Length: 496
Image (cartoon, rainbow, N blue to C red):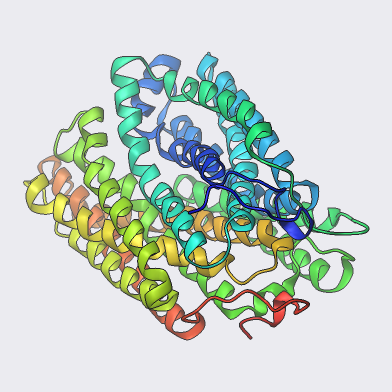
């Protein structure tokens, strides 16, 4: 990977003499902050509840507030990066994220903490698509970008597991508030580094109009959709609140599609981009991966702590092999990408990843880490590394630089919506199975752990099935190679 590059500022390119290694390091650190914060708080929740006197419902919203705002604002953040300038938007996102982290660490009550988490989610929704679009326009398509995406994929896949370990270490040794404070110095250093490392880039446009109606309907619709998913476990899938949120989200998102297709002069999401079958297929695959994968951290954390009796620190450390497997397999995937093709790697990764989730369904009340958890972690980690790199490549490759931020936002949105929906569905499946087993046992307290584990087993089986369904999507929609559009060729024409 060359250290310097001369790229034009127009059409999404960066200014001359960009140090690509420094760019990759900077955006990787920022992305790691965003990924870590999705999980770093999880193992600290019991301590936070004791310190601020929060009940279980309030603690759930410490997690859900981040997910809700992050998932809802990704599309807006990605398009803003294309139109307003990727460096400028990236900088704003970091300031918002670090500032919210400081407020969260200082919080003395429930309202302040939950609001701070929501604002963190907003910062993450600005940072993540801007960072990936900077990567896309900085590194040339082919082996150079594949290597950069290999690092990116390792961060995306391993960051969540590292967050659990970091959360355990910080909570155990310096206190839960440092799960927030740790972002402040890192964010400050990144903000200081941006003017020295990044040059501005944005879409070429003689005149820019902003699709306000599209932005409002998409953002509010996605927020309501994610809210319905994350609150369904509290209020029930058939409750008036849940159904009402789903209906309102459906109406707003349908109106958004109408605005984009018929009314907007400069759409927030040009619908023609979905004619690119590889881009559409990759986003659907990543949504299915989110459906199956995101629940793993939730259920496995409960299993190790509530059934096997692990401490928060030990539970976090248990994920290290998963992180290592994802990092190694992401590197291998980036090496193979130009030799094998994205479709083949994605299919192999999905099959192996699903096998790992199926292996997790073997957990038992008397289970052991070496016998049941470790083999499943290694297998699933290898599979996910082989999915994240080619999946991201397929989602952002072959698009014009002018919509790099949009393509980046779409794949992030697919993962986030998939994760929120998957966690809600799998929690319902696990809880239903647990209740069924307890009822059959006459609600015998001695069978509580058996019932809990059987619920986890059922969730892992369904999670693996979601991931395996991605194989069909990949085979039908994703091309084996990724090519940029020819000069002057509309992006929508590619992949028809």
